[in-house]
Length: 160
Image (cartoon, rainbow, N blue to C red; front, side):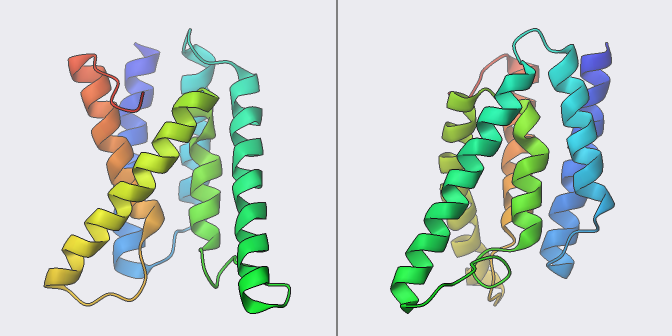
């Protein structure tokens, strides 16, 4: 019961992320905080997830951010901070907010497929509307809503 309510609240919040990121290219700070809180509740209630999964997922994100920093620093031949130039801070905060929802292996698969999903969706949107930046947190939240709906309604896990 608590788990179902948690998923419903999470899906509502994810639609707010999609709306804000798509329309304003920014996220109000309270929304990722609420997403993280609901995700923690789901992690706590779930029999499959543990607190260590959150730490593993954050470590994976740190590894990716370090890799991005190295890549753009080497490319530009000077130290380059990719945050707010190449990837938004809201996108990173969103990734952190959803870390309690996954085991590491599932998070890696979600991360990769979610990025591909975002790129494909961005390409489709470009046919109809000119946008310069990818609303990554918004597109990933849509992918997560689709994933959660399929997983909880049809008992099929499409992330792994």
